[in-house]
Length: 379
Image 1 (cartoon, helix red, strand yellow):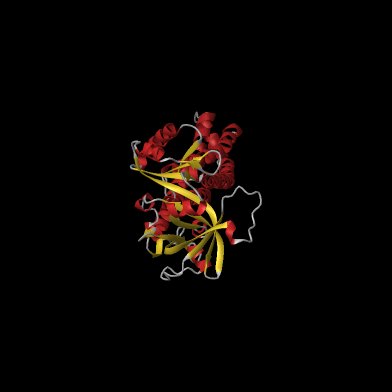
Image 2: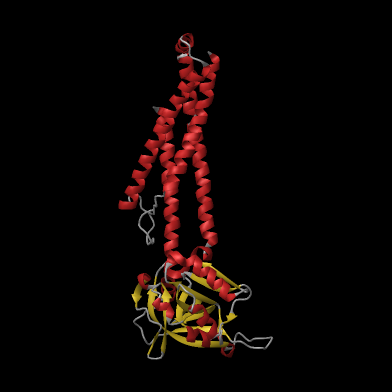
């Protein structure tokens, strides 16, 4: 009974922890969808590339492409009243708002980039807090500063003539995740062009696809249309390092808990060893009745198998129950004030349950083998 409970608790813990990692990975992907495009085109060398209208038209004709957002992104100094900070200014064209990527993330104001010829900006919540931005204060604009393009080898940064300076009316505030909230301001593409002295140069192109299930085919077609010199990344590839880190953590947790289950299986080893000693006379009786060593070994292995399968089933059922309760009712909270989610995210995946059960059964059967063999040989 104790052996079965040990295996069951270990199995339950493994299933729950793996499901939490699945939930965290799924949650991160949800954040990406709120900010990043389905496909992102960037140059392999340099930070910008020439993007004539013909290139955009060519890409727009590819099957599966819904719309293309042209992007200019640079670091700028922004001032608002008495506060200032360095942010990423992301200049986007009219297609950006059509993609509805910030629609669910807007917490104040409106999603507006231009009105009556006046440029507006959508500000991250962290930037808004740092600068004290008030979207209702129409006559208090954001001042953006960027070094002018010049052929001079020396620039006098103490002079205001060394910078391009433009004003932007804050129209809305978004909140997605701290990395984005603390660093980004969205502005019209033409505004960014004028501030950075860009013509046809773009830092990236963002593509929204018609059907998310066909994204790999669209990605391949875009790569073929562009030729060399560009990288075309889907959302997972844009954040490959983060997702890789989550998978590595999940793997190490799996190995650690598997090791713990292996330690717990020593209970089975010692229980069967004691059983072999206790039933030594009964084993002799079985031999006298015509049983052979193989049959005796199978009896003890069957005992180990009962413990293994019972513990695995109990652990899987309890693990599934806890994950379902967490998924449905959010029993365990994050415990962080202002967190994006109230409770730990959980996602149940079949293969986690399958491999957990497989590993548990293999470990416990190995632990059962040696006492069973000893019982057969010792008699």
